[in-house]
Figure 1 (cartoon, one colour):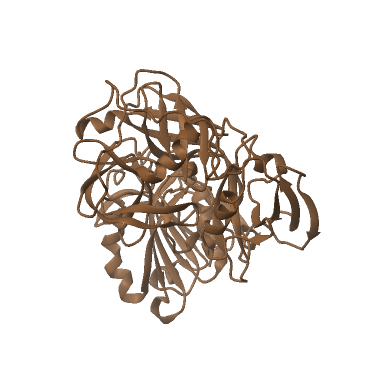
Figure 2 (cartoon, one colour):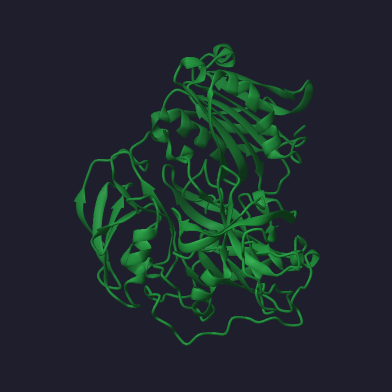
Amino acid sequence: MSRRFRTALRPVAALAVAVVIVAACGGTSSTPAPTASATPVPTRSLRPTPTAVPSPTSATVGTLDAVKSATIQIEADGSFVDPSQGQLLNTAGRGSGFILSPDGTALTNNHVVTGAALLKVWVGGDRSKTYNARVVAASECSDLAVIKIDGSGFPVLAWADVTPNPGVDVYAAGFPLGDPEYTLTRGIISKAKADGETSWASVDSVIEHDAAINPGNSGGPLVTKDGAVVGLNYAGNDVRQSFAIGRAEVDKVLPQLLAGSAVNSIGVNGEAMRFDDGSSGIFVSSVASGSPADKVGIKGGDLITKLEGLVVATDGTMADYCDVLRSHKAGDVLAVEVFRPSTGDTLEGRLNGTPLQVVSTIETGGGDQGGSTAADYAYATVSTDGGEISTEMPADWKDVRTGDWSRNDETVGIRIGASTDYPTWIDGYTVSGAFLAVSATLADKDIETILDGDKGTFSKDCTYDSRKDFDAAGYVGMFDLYTDCAGTGNAFVELAVKSADGSYLVFMQLVALADRDFTAADHIIETLTVKGPLP
């Protein structure tokens, strides 16, 4: 199965990086502007002259209602690479953050900003004013980044003077699903010290809570009823658990980040991955210019397989990789081994030392490790009759149907359906094919409600596997995965996502007989063009 459909705890940034069909952080993924610092890998014990953590000022908000004014939405524009599709140019993803001081210093996640060409920021949900921002410094292991917004006189949030014990009321603030509308959800802390080891970060412990977060919430504040910060949201999972990095963890790295020093970082936006053949590594979606990773020659699309001779990500997390970084001081020369899927090359070099050089090469069919690539299908452009929407479908799916999309006897959008035999596709799960629809009418509808409405129907025929977050190609939402449909062993996917500006909803259903069908689903979304007008 395409790795885009893996089940995992995911970051909640809306970033089109690394994982395309399953980012939550993210999404995206998620998840990724070059960092201002090229400081070589620091260690926990290395302490540059600290910059004082910003303390409350007259600009500090003091109520829950005022939290919005100091919460920001971040758009990261740049070129990122995902595990199976190669380079994605000019990809934009969105996350959240919050302002620490009136001069525009703000805190967010590493996976939201690292590797982007430029950052755009909106403050307090005000879309009339767009600010540029730059990365001051980041820590990929702590998944934290300090950015500086152009401007001054901003309202700020202060840390809460409370212990994050179970039962404490909390509120998650931010801009989920790429939506410009500010959201605030309520919950309680359920666990003070949950495991913080994930595929994209290595944090000793995090706060577990049940305030709802979605892709795009990454970096946003978790606050008390008085509007003070308890933690920084960074992850969620399929069983409605949400996670935030608490003040104790932030304080370990924040002084160095404010001073412009990277911490436990070589300058990558990456994710730990394990493959069916037992291999593993840190997949690099982007690299910060001027960082140790950039100087040694690591590129987006590379897989870091060894660091100081240690095979990394064997457990699917960043733990071992980050422990190596924490065990060395700034400027240490670190041996690194990289596999480059695009060429089949294995390269070796030394961070803060000699650049990467090819040591061996294997035959490779492309960028998807251990799975099918888009090359398994030839693609052809299909469009609605009026050209309102178009996309690239597998050329083998020659039975194409277009027209209005009706739901509950109401025309709500426009559609394209394609298969080798569309009537057979409609009636069962024995042939590959897809139904793609776009609607402006449903743009304000809750995505989970849409998916829940069909869940009962398909659960009768198939085994419901899971609901996962989607974050890619400017779209953010969710999809349901069903397996062994009608006893065929084939899979069924239902996807609902919204455009970055929230103006329309994209809905897709797919029957998958093989890995290449999952790859085709990715390709259909990535090549979707919407010109309108839409019902």
